[in-house]
Length: 129
Length: 129
DNA sequence: CTGTATCCGGCCAGATACTG
DNA sequence: CAGTATCTGGCCGGATACAG
Image (tube, rainbow over all chains, first blue to last red; front, side, top):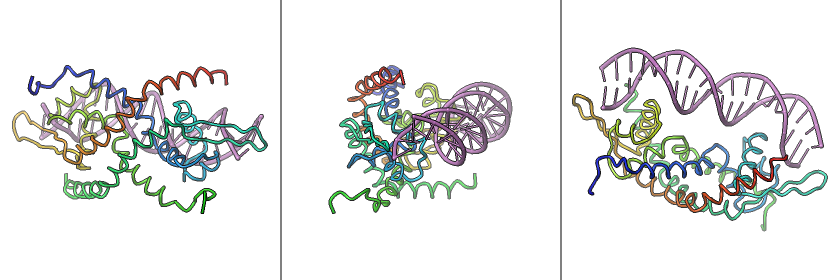
């Protein structure tokens, strides 16, 4: 069967792709990658993360951390003391995600300038439309 | 210098990370990956893409394609005929992006069920909060 | 067939204030 | 210190209608 017309039979492929997307949506938001990136090397406390990720609000940091905890990408440890001390640590699962992301990061590094150039060229040649 | 306090000196690292994010935001939206995924094997016309990507609206398909064209991830070819015929083809750049994404897709495949289980467990153990 | 133009409802992130 | 509660404005995506 060489080159089927449209290959409408692979609805399943698209379904699988959507399931992947559901997972990848994990990291598609604005802050998640920055947060787990900061946790790559070491455990950090809430306040440390808040300072480390420039511009994030308390609300968004909390939300991001909760979701990552729910997905099992990091662990949240509460030390019952005064003042309270909460530490966040990347799990093995989170660490492997970061590893997989490195390929994409490498692609971005390699092609960032090319993309910027492409955009400039497009904007220059299409501004008259 | 073993284990610096917070390592606030690597603001630059975060800057680079943000530049990466700026690029990765390309594919962080709802439709981009589905569209370029459909173009992996072959050139497709607008209408073919519209049917191939289930649920996408004309507006969103057009927007997605325009952005991908601007970034140089695909080419848009207009065949002057009646009715008009517009074909979209992945560029080398777009193809390499898809290759880099495959590592993430593999991670998603490997860990999807684990994550689903993690969520169930979290929801079960935290519903009383 | 391949788009563009317009309206519009929902969601999400930011700001702010408050709490154990 | 580590959050939660509430309000709000803006953006994004879908629906619809129209055009070359």
